[in-house]
Image (tube, rainbow, N blue to C red; front, side, top):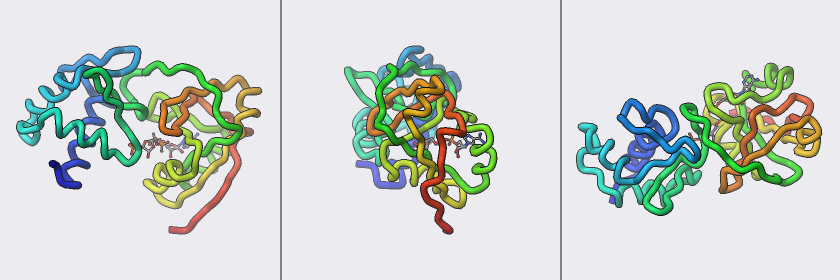
Length: 187
Ligand code: HQG
């Protein structure tokens, strides 16, 4: 068993490989879903001085305990479910609920209200069905702002939504007219 700190650290390593820089570890991810065999991820970990002892069971523990269900492990393959900066993973378009949420911060707000939501350094804008995920995302960079996204209005503006599972939705861009402020909190 990994302790909590080790689990978090291994999860960061897995994110680096599966979301951001697989080529740094000599890995090519499946271009469709961004997956690779778990055994390949274990080998890549073992090539790092910090992770020489990692076994598949440790990876499985991280997948199981991830608070935001960052990873999916199926048929011996593992992938990050969302958050990619490296490759544009394909998702099936889906039908979200009428309202979605996006967590951001005070500093980003003026520009978002002017030009809408852009993926910035990732491949997609990240949205959620509930405010819990949005709160976790938005709280990372200062004063939290939660935006509500009017899905009907976005669809009228030709926005396609993709489902990443676990209440997380993705989009290429969300126009400003679809975004309104739900809640602002001082930290
Ligand atoms: C902001 C993490 C200015 C956007 C999180 C966000 C989430 C703009 C930042 C997941 C903008 C991008 C994704 C615009 C968007 N002008 N700022 N036009 N459009 N932004 O990290 O959604 O823990 O790439 O509001 O918790 O924060 O790593 O995206 O603040 O779940 O699994 O630009 O990644 O999950 O930041 O986070 P990010 P995000 P993990």
